[in-house]
Structure formats: C-alpha cells, structure tokens
Amino acid sequence: MTLHVWLGFLLAAILIAVSPGPGAAVSMSTGLRYGYASALRVIGGLQSALLIQVGIVAIGLGALLTTSALAFDIVRLLGAAYLIWLGLQKWRAPVAEIDENQDVGRPEKLFVEGLLVNLTNPKAIVFIAALTPQFIDPTQPQWPQFVIIGLTMCGVDTIVMSGYALLASKLRRWLHDPKSLRAQNRFFGGIFVGAGALLAASGRG
Image (cartoon, rainbow, N blue to C red):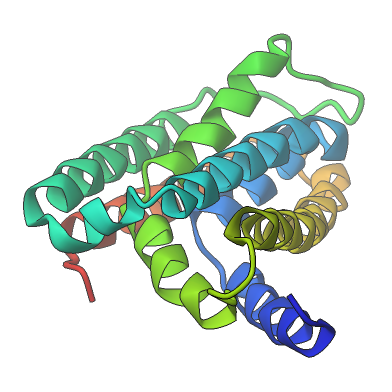
C-alpha cells in the first residue's frame, strides 16, 4: 500500500470514526459513569470487534453478509436486540451518586459490552467489505494490506472514542444529584434503544 493510498484510507477512517454511533454512545456513557480508565476497557472491546470484522472481510466471509439476505437479517436482528436490551438496562439503572474515584468491579464486563456493540452490527462488516477493495492493490500480497487497514481503523477509532470518553468523564463532577443521574441514564438508554430500533428497521442500504 503506497503512502497516498494509505492517506486516502486514513481520511476515510477518520470520517467513519467521528460519525456518532453505538460505539460513541457506549464510550461516552462508560466515561460518564466510571471515568476514562474504565472506558478504555469498552474501547478495547470495540477495537477487538473491529479487528475481527476486518479479519472476516479479509478471508472473504464478508461476502456472505453482502449476498445473503438471511445471514444479514439474522445478525442485524441479534444486534438490534442487544442494543435495545442494553438501552433498557441503562434506562432502568438505579440512581446512585457518581463517585469520581469509582471503578467498575468486573473489567471483563465492560470489555464484552464494547465487543458485542460492534460485533453485532452487520453493517460494519458490509461497510468494510465495500470500502476496503478500493484501497487494496490486487497485484500485491493482500494480508499485509489488511493488517495496515485494520491497525489504521483501530488506531483512529481508539483516538476518537477516547475523545468521546474523556469529554464525558469531565462532566462527572456535575452529576451528583438524582435528577441529573436519572436524566443521564435515560439519555443514553434512549440512544441505545433508538439505535437498536433503527438497526432492526434498516435494510442493506
């Protein structure tokens, strides 16, 4: 992959990452609730899922979701159900004062949450499958190019999600009353439910 091709992909990766979506929502809600250090666990899950999706496209399985309506719909509905469940959990979360030194007790729970948010989104695989061929040189070995693509996407997404999480974590000091905490729970809960509903209602386009 030449430098100018990589720079073109870098620009595309930045535009994709800064577009608000479930990944941004889960990064912000975790940063707001537990702080940036805990949000990094969610972000790690998001990036692990992204690498898996790039790997799926690299070995050609992305074509399955692109061409099979049944496979796409199964993954889409599972992803929508998970997002809606996550939203309802956040909406109904008990109101408790945020301790600025609070940390989550089970690090793997946040990692899995981030992993599932990205992994159950079939549009991500379809989008990667549609985007990456434009930056792959078929005359050169493809796996090294996919490694560059995966690392670039993860690097950019980590920076952007960290920005969202850091921004949210700065608001923790102002959220010490039940009314504000309830509004925060319902705001992010509504975002996840809305994202799940949109995913359930969407097609391939």
